[in-house]
Length: 586
Image (cartoon, rainbow, N blue to C red):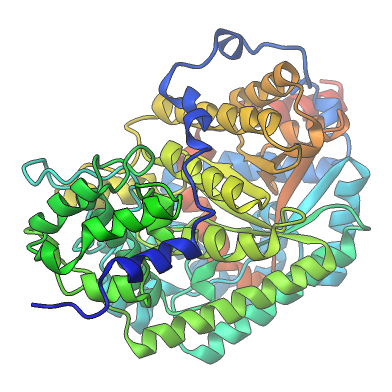
């Protein structure tokens, strides 16, 4: 069989268009991730903010606010209450009626975790934070009740989540891995962090307009200081399209691992010999590929005689000719063919990009940083592609307008961050990243057990903590070895040890406060947030907003998502009680 167009000149033209994508940055790129943390990092009891000073941390709160926070934390310390929260709230609403129920919510959980209903109520809250050295990240807290929706049922039965696992191995004798053929279970979908399940194009445009309002509110209330707005890509397009795109991107990685000299996205390269061996494995007639001619042409042009993963990534994507040609072959005996994007899916991609670029345009114009939140692993390849490879090269050349989110409980996070940094350095854009631990632990583990593959997340908190610190240290080291301001990090965590670690590394590496931001959720971890603000650190509160009715699904999800953390928030309750007693002079 002859494949039209697949010859040396064709592939050479593709690679010439991507000739600036090189491997030169890799040898020093996050090399420390393969070694333990430095000794000085392990001993990070450096003098810094005092998180025990309740008069400082809670000085801006009224007694009523302190008592409310203590009551809410006390209630959430019982998992049985959190598990029954939806039913209890429905009963309360039925008994009290709409008006009294809204007041009850504002006196309790809504008032604790939601900033306000609209711009009028948001501005005083944001001004109060600013007066205490704390800025805001606005998040429109509206989400659908996906568990009972028809769209949820459709996605539940049809979705096929791929792995976002850059370090690929192709040994078919190994234990099952997270693959493009895995179907998510119900618990994975219903209990996850907020996901907008697709209804129609009009609804996606409505979500876009709401996000634009959020960006403008953030700009208007920031008084010229750096402001953030958070968005979810599942609100801007068909979720099944994001799954499909993720499948294609992971398939591209798998094909590279077959054609490369080693199945490693950072170390592996495609050579003429490895290409021939891989083509044979894929049952492709190598005589039709003109591979020797391809690499002779590369050498004659002074180009590298090997193809790196980033060169491959930009040359081998859905919609490009090389992808279309190779998609007619299976890339292993256990995996299906690469998905080919239909005309409808190509239109979906255009619609998603139109919406997300509209948001980025407004954010750039108004001086707001756009934070793209992480979602489930089976969406992440598509989200990362759109954020890092489509938005950042367009909007981050002068400053970090767009931020990606990296989940450090994923085993592949070090490789993922390294590839992002390599992409940033070769393309010359600012890399903005929010570091989180991750919000899907129970769901990811459950899905892995049900489908019989290795969990993509670390086994326990200790491993996740180590992963978080190693990635954070690596990013800080890149800050001091590359152009200042090219790497910008938000340390989004409530973990005091991680915050102390970050402060210690900032002092050790002489990283300026302008390059590191800290973030915590509204209503949580105030003893950390306000202490950091008092000491001049760049700190933010994540500020959800919306009416009581709109925000209720957000509140229920947040309670379930942070159930373990809320139940174990003994220290926060102790500090609140300490301040209450101090005020009463008990």
